[in-house]
Amino acid sequence: MYKTIEDEVLKKTAPAAMKAEFLQHEFDRLHKFCVLIYIASIAVWITYDLVLSFVGNQSFTWRSVMFVGVFTILVIILLFTRDARHFQKLNLLFIFTIALGTRLLIEGVSEDHQPAWLLLAASTTLFTASVLPLNRWAFFAAQLITWAFLNPFYDTGIETQALGGVMALSYTTFICALTIYSFLTLRKAKLYNFIMSKLLLDQAYIDTLTEIPNRRSFMTRADKQLHATPREHDHYLAMIDIDNFKKVNDVYGHDIGDEVLKRIAQDIKAVMSHHEYARLGGEEFAIYLAGVRREEVEVLAGELCRVVREQSTQHPVTISIGLARVLDDDTLNQALVKADAALYESKHTGKDRFTFHHQA
Image 1 (spheres, rainbow, N blue to C red):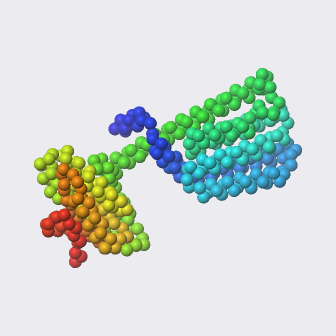
Image 2 (image 1 turned 135 degrees about the horizontal axis):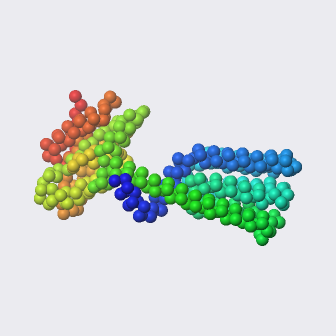
Image 3 (image 1 turned 60 degrees about the vertical axis):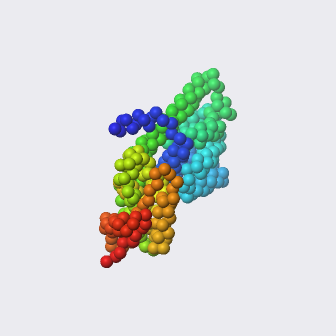
């Protein structure tokens, strides 16, 4: 089964919305890792500066302090960044700053050693970028910025025809190809794993016919709402049943019955969009209304009955609703039993109505 789903996923191209959702998911998951990478990159830059200051006979100047200050500000901004789109731009600014700072450091080294230092710095920067949660344009922009500042052939006196030049060119090509391949391969693998996980999760928690949450999803979400503290106002649970649904199936067939189910599900989704709702099975639906007053529940239940009743369709139906206030010591199953009892009363007092459960 897993292999079949995997083959279907691999045949499809992920839509832009899915890619954006994946990128945000990756950034949320790797946010601390991004901060760690930035701090490690700054530590490497400071190490370069110290080595060149004491071994290369350069002085640790005010310019070094200024760059460290800018790096620190960028890390602080990253700590408060939560949007993956903002991170793409912030990362380019970070790479621009660190590449510029590295170039200025290496310019103090003798020309014979500059290409090696530049290639080392470029490879470190690009390998770092290849594991960050970046989209394609941000990664390739990082490539351009890196080579613009850390180009071993610019103003270093290296001859491309000489042995050193050929080796530097070969290594540059190798680094470019390897980091691009690593980034694209890793990104594709992560994207397809994300799509697979989302697809499997949807199949586990979404009703395939009506495309709204199923019983498993409802029990999980409603139970979370039930135990949320502190409570704001009351909580109510609603059970919904389509009136005379068996007759619809017997007279018009199951295809029409499925269409009715899908239509009711969309009506519930439209009216109860701010609450937890689901198809429990068959023609039964449930809604968990958290933090509402009784008057609000009455308005919503009446509106849902009206919307279903007034649907312009060849196969009109009505619904009955049972409502129960969820007490502080109620379990979800106890609330469902009370709502089901209220639903039974609605069914046997005329249908197309809502009824509140009478507390003992």
